[in-house]
Every structure is written in structure tokens, then in C-alpha cells.
Length: 445
Image 1 (cartoon, rainbow, N blue to C red):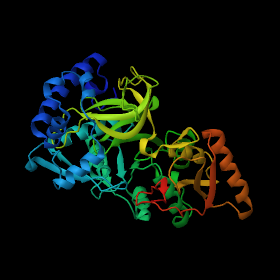
Image 2: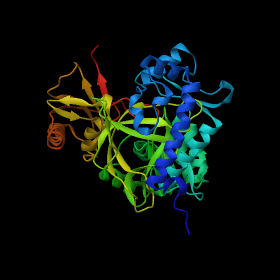
Image 3: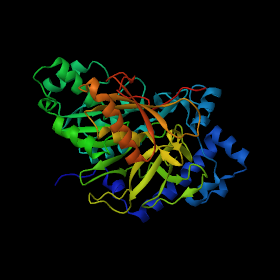
Image 4: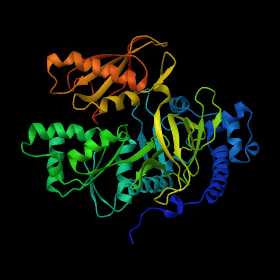
């Protein structure tokens, strides 16, 4: 009988058993934090909070939030790991750093025990997505200190799969290796296969993506696959199952959510590692985690040694889609990420997220590439948004006016705000080495 879960004890835990487990782990973690983390000791002393005031999970709301700004300040004052490092420095086994695209980067330190738990949760997610020991998976995320590189590599290995550590760049060589080494799975961002299609078309005449023999794609790091049109197109072109199997928050835990074969909604798979709460990002009041709830995700470590975080604001806005057991037997709730709280724009009373614009454009491929940027030339309030959109490679000059009108109409009909579209050539919007583009550009001081 096939093993359907990597860690059945955690993935199928009952709500009552999970609540008991989390209560015990949280109590131990808070003891540890109050005793060993200088940052939290100072933070809680300043707030007048004593350890004995936090007797249950419900009391967590008494504690102040932790933000990325707090972590940056801590590491600036106490280099390199900050005074939120709670374990002896000699116990640090691996160090990553965040990308720093929205500010200075943060060093993330992990002990051996931290890594074991990280790899277990990551393996749960990749296994739920369909990865098995019989797969040969090429890992195409940035290895240069980013959490998604080497640590995701180790998460993939933990499933028992054979992992080929390719990284990013040199796409021509990657295509040859996939073809020659019998690789049947790929781990990357969901936009990367589209880039590979361009390379195949230009450099491998007569070869189609489906000829490479990939059966499974494990994707994460950016939105896209929640759109059935985008996903079905990828599966048709490549002949592989495209799975949204790698959602995480790099400052907290590399990967703790994936879809399953029966349900294309992200399953929470961080049981025993994370306590998840929702808050209203404006009022900061707690929101119960139940079907239909929407709020900013707040995470608390339950078993972290090196840099435990308590009430950490992720800025990710989450909608709870389903609770109770899934058909696959996993009991974690199902959710989707609505957008980033710091990317949310208000246009004449309408909340606008770049994810929404992305979905509109993905439904227009190949008339557009799907890449775009929202250009803000002044602070809020906004009555409309300027959106730069890459046109498709085969769009003729006399078709551009109609395409611009079509995009603006779709944005208005779908998202209920006015978008003023400027078309630009394919590949003209700057991407990172992983093929990602910044979605919101502020040109004002």
C-alpha cells in the first residue's frame, strides 16, 4: 500500500490532539524565549509582560508583535545574528539570508534540531505534492544563501528522491541535463518553465517541452498556479503535473504548505512546528481561524532553538478556505494567499493586489507574456493605476490599440478598478536570476 503522507502522525493529527500538543510546545517555547532571548526579554520588560501572564494560547494576544523591522534592528545592533539568537553561537549549524529586496537582508541561523524539523515539514509538503523516492528532481532555485536553495534541496532529499542541485542560470545546459540524465521532476518558481520554453524555441529546434520527459513540477516562491488557466496551460505544454508544493515564509520556516492530489488548495502542514494566528492588519485584532476568515498571517515558533520568533507578522494576507479533514486524510486547514499587506493598494475604495492583476493577464497569454508592473508616481489616494504590461511576441503593431483596450476592460470587469495600460516589448521588464519581476514600483520619494 502506498504511503500517502510523509509524517502521518502530524499530518493527520486530530484537532484535540493538536491543541494539546501545541499548548505543551508553546509553554516550553515561551519558557525558552523568556530565559534565553535578549531581544524578547527587553521587548517584554518594556511592555510590562511577565512570563506567568501567558498561561494559554489565548493569552498570546497580550504579547507585542514581532516585525521584520525588529529583526533588522536587532542584527544591526548585534551583528551578525542579532540579540534574538537564543542558542549558543557554536550550536548554529547553517546560515541563510533573505533576499533584502524590500530592505536590508536578514541572517537566518539554524541549529541541527531546527534543520531536522525544517526538513521534516518541507518533506511533508513535497510528498503531498507527489514527490516520491523514485523521482529524479532537478532543483532550480538560487543556492546563493537563499533559504529556497540549499534548504529546499535538503527538504527534497528528505523524501528519498534523487536531487540534482542545478540552481539558476545556464538554462541551455539545464535542458540538456533534463534530457540526458533521465530527470522526471523539476523544482522551481512557476514562471521558470515559461522562460525555458523560450530557450527551447530559440536553441533546440524540433524539440518541444513535453519531449523532455518531466512528469512532475513542484513550484513555489511566487503566485500563478492557483489560476487554473495558467496551470492547465503549463501541464499541456510540458506534459507534467504542476503542483503548488512549496509555500513558506523564509524568516520563519522554509516550506510548510502544499496542495494534495485530491484538493488543489494549500494545506497547512506545519503542525508541531508553527502556531498560526490571523489578525486584522489595520486594527491588529485577532481573527478566529475558520472557513471564510481573511487576515494577516502571524506565526509563532513552537520548537525553534536558534532564532525563535513569537507573534511574527508575515505581511501575507491569508484566506481560510476549508477546515476539517481533507479527502487525502490530512487535517490541516486549506488556504490561499490573497496578497501582501504591504502591496495592498486602495483605488477609490477598492482593495487591489498585484495577484489579481496577474490572474487577469495570465488568462490573456499568449497575447501578453503575463509579466507586468504597477507604477506608482505619487502616494495614495489613487483613482486609477498605471500598469506596464509586456505584449506577446506575435502581437503586431496594428493590434496594440485593441490589446490595450482589451486589457483595460478585463481589469475593470474583473477587479473593478481603472487600470491605465502601457504596452512594452517582451522581456523588457527586468527579472531576477530566478525569472521574477517586482510587481509594484514606486517612483516618488
